[in-house]
Amino acid sequence: MIVKTAEFVGCFVSVSKCPEPKLPEYAFIGRSNVGKSSLINMLTERNKLAKVSNTPGKTQTINHFIINDNWYLVDLPGYGYAKISKVQRKKWEQFIRSYLQKRSNLQCVCLLIDARIPPQKIDLEFANWLGEMMIPFVLMFTKTDDRKFKPENIEVFKEQFLETWEEMPQHFLTSAKKKTGREEVLSFIEEVNEKFVPAK
Image 1: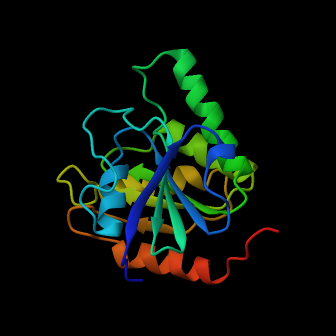
Image 2 (image 1 turned 45 degrees about the horizontal axis):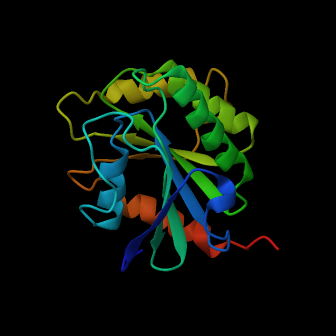
Image 3 (image 1 turned 45 degrees about the vertical axis):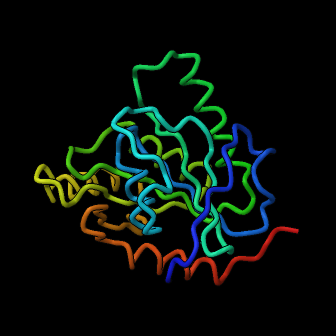
């Protein structure tokens, strides 16, 4: 897939206010500071499409971008950031989960996992929740270019994942700096888009 256009559509705090669900949609989510914005910018080849910040918890809304005028890329708030109030965290969790469960044109959740660190319980729990809700998802291991990256972290993640799953979902190794995984991820999205049928 060649990304010809990538434009910001808007920020939303509820599913009802999101754009009409007439195009296929892909939601990117992960722990705070997992490298989500950098990955989105790499995939779209737009340096400032998604705002990159060193401050965890920066994304606080459902952010829609339209790609090539025929599919949506959605930047969701990161989870697991401890330095926000419990009330705010619960509010985020509610509207994120509401979006994931109710958005009819959502084709896949791209669950980002930091490949530099050992498996995190919160990532495994979120993957299990997606499975329980029967929401399709793929895994994207981020920051594989970093000197702290350890391939064994991915192997341990797989081992722990398979303790509750029969098989691993499709997964990608990515690096925003080296553009690792870009062609594979965009090809995957292109294949899913071809099968998309809008809900009536």
